[in-house]
Image (cartoon, rainbow, N blue to C red):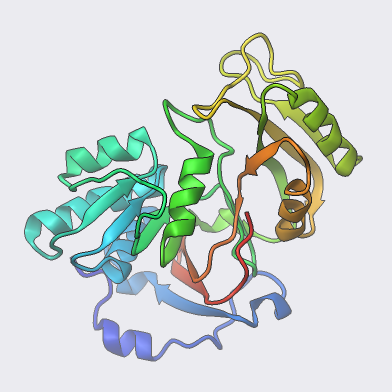
Length: 291
């Protein structure tokens, strides 16, 4: 199902000179924005429109596609399955990023393969918890991990893809981010690592070990979460606006005992933003990878 009527003439009228209603002009200078009015879309929910647009625009026959997890990714997976069923797409193979996305893809009839180091992935889509305006640096892993879900494996798939799109709602795209950054640490010396992180961001953040069940707390309770790779997960909860996610990632990478974190920067990158007025599609073509 086509999302945009007369798409070629419509897109030819859209250029990077459009200015979105958020953020600093200097941060947007290297980004390209396409605005797709709601009048050019079908009558489904804005997030469903964003998911359909992502599949219809970026997935081509014969591609190997990384399949993200979350509400928007689930909608995209189901639409991809419908496109394969109708013959609009052929010979697409999915690489699921979680047990949930694998289950969704199997139900949708998408052929699957598992991720191996060095896998060639043409395109990947995923949800993000938040995305930093301008830089398009994303935070993943804030929500509860289910089953064998792995932040590290998801980041590996996203980084291995030739092209990446995040599908989000407009309240998830902002500058001056607050909230938590998930950080994976070696379990044996987790407390020492947590104290070093706490000292690094003293006054700006609190460090809590995430529990597997029960109430959250600084020590993770009686049953701290252990990932399938054997790591503890710390939530570095920022109480002041984060000036730069890239700088936070750079600092975390210097700490012994940190195995990874939920900050990801991958280019080229597209962010498809669902709003009440339609879709905003932001592209960033070049930048160094963070995390």
